[in-house]
Amino acid sequence: MKNGARTTLVLMFLAGWLGACASAVIQSTPTAQSSPTIAMPEKAVIVFKDGTCEYTGPEVLPYGQLKYSWRVEEITKAQFGVITFSLAEGKTLQDFIDWDATGEMIPPGWVINLAIDDMKDAGGSFRFSRDLSANGSFKGDPIYMACYRTDTNGAINILGPFVFSKIP
Image (tube, rainbow, N blue to C red; front, side, top):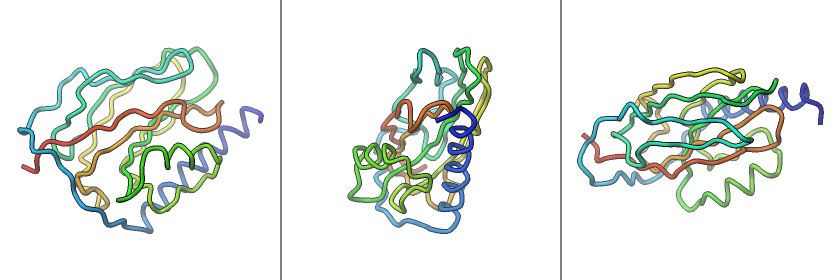
């Protein structure tokens, strides 16, 4: 597949995912952890390099808060992005991986979109901050972050699960 077509597919996927999120609210049982409320450290970082992405930072996040910085150390014409999601009750990360491998652009209803960090060019550093509790689909369930690049098919890595501290 040519790079332009891949870019178009990834952007269509992101647009479809946003549309699916807006049109469906998935019910799930909250599973917030009972650990103490903690402040989000400044050291939550996602780095794109060597054809994948890696996360350094805590696995327990303050309830509803998603903050990280990210940088793209790749030297390519591709663009990069991060999608944060949770899964409906009864679904597993393997279900997501299997779906993602199909190349379908619109996620099934059991993929609960929580945030999309837009596609960015290689060679940059960025910050992302979102109060997920403002998203009506957020129930405090564990979340995952899927890393994408426009010159590949499917996620290049899936980070998580990340859990939240107890509800304040």
